[in-house]
Image 1: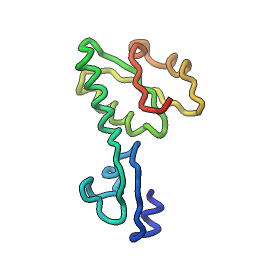
Image 2: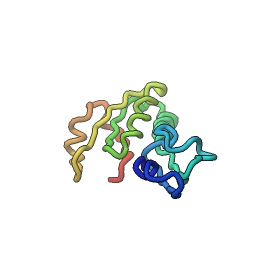
Image 3: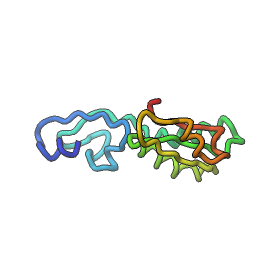
Image 4: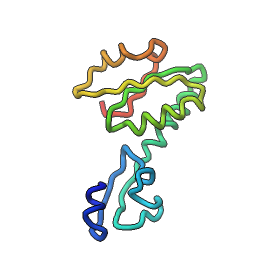
Length: 125
């Protein structure tokens, strides 16, 4: 995306921002009027990461800890969820999955014992 923006200011660029916030990284000026030659879809997965925690806490009031599996593509979701966890009084451990195909048994074994009962998977498994 950055290279496309640097290559031309007039050729239209259509983005699908599923795993990053185009506002945060400076690709657009705002959602209603992106400005420049960039347009597209922002799926707001980053915002949904904290909403998932809120939903779990509302649905399961005794819910206190979880583990989130994430990879390089879903890193923004991990950052958002880990920031939001404290506001909900939750302990959220993160396990980064680094090499596909992912070894989920190994990843779960590396998670803290109190976080193994609830898994959050923002990645396509």
